[in-house]
Image 1 (tube, rainbow, N blue to C red):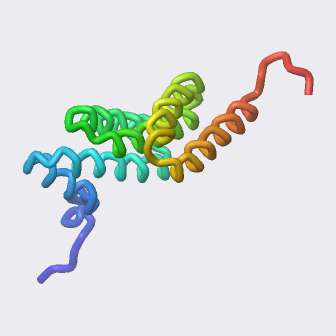
Image 2 (image 1 turned 30 degrees about the vertical axis):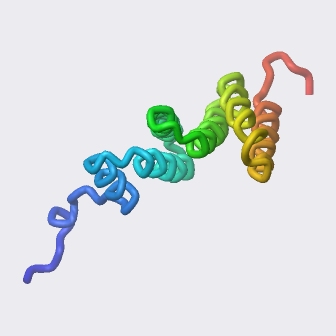
Length: 136
């Protein structure tokens, strides 16, 4: 058997999460697909693919609305708020974090700490943006 060469190993590699999402999509398991999209978005955030992360989180939120899964939707809003903060979309980030907090105040008080930390992150990122004509 010949040794593998770059040409032979150049097939696109898919993560286990992407494969699981394909299976969920084909089997019409929308909750699993919504969770998978959120997981992929988390990894996209890590590598700096913010547009792709935003797109996957919005798809996840839409799926959650279809199946009326408020908890996974709330987590989607929370993570979308963080992604939008990194993108500098301050108003949109605040709206997403507000959506998340409305659900958490009624149902999951213990998860509010994460949302508050994302709000703090948003303010720190806002403060780090240079303002033109500002005297230091």
